[in-house]
Image (cartoon, rainbow, N blue to C red; front, side, top):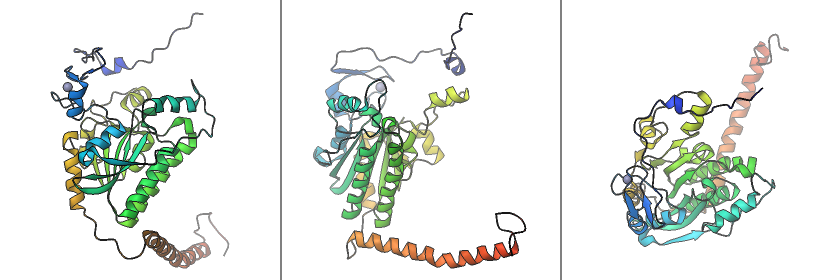
Length: 336
Ligand SMILES: [Zn+2]
């Protein structure tokens, strides 16, 4: 019996398309074509316009270091922890071994999917952590988590605002559960900032998905997004293929997430640095209180533990009463 090929295309769900989306033409390497309006630009022209199409405002992807240059005063920043490299504890091999993939990504110039730096924006000092989608899809592995946590601690200790720009496909598959653990680690980093009273500012760039959206990037004190950025746990293609239902065209788009209340403002990249500087001015931190931050955090932790301990006898008394009444969750007719 001849096997019939299974058709998994979802085009039939999308309905017919009268006008095909304009495709970027293949151009000499120094030129770029806008996928939205098909205008052509030289790379230098694009760089000057911060990789935003001057004709239609389409936001192109930006690398980690280029983003730091765009945001920092005079393009000057001090990069941190460039020496950290991913290990391969699972000895993971898909089409090629994981270390080979890391090497190939490094050969393009970046050292990891997160670039951290001390910088100044509008004269105000801050710690910035920028994700680089070009490095293995901006995926969050153990090095990304470690750098992120260190950056949060540094901002908390120096009492300067923490800014992060995200662009990621989510947790790094090749590191398995170790990558998933970074979700909790980055959240703890934000907790340290909150305990120290230091603001966390998140800028969501295209795309912010998976474990990155499901962890730190959705809990900043202030959340900006770039126009047209996809911000969702799963992309629309995956959801449509799974549910066999058509999603709205603007599903997960920054503008829709603004309506949904997940985002505080959609900010054009050309205004981003000015906006961040103003925001940091509004959130200006008071002078550091006497005593080291470590001591302060330890005191906070002790106070919290003491509060929990105080509540315990009360809880256990309530539980004892419930058991003696026979309505404990274990079932009817408990022991007297
Ligand atoms: Zn355009």
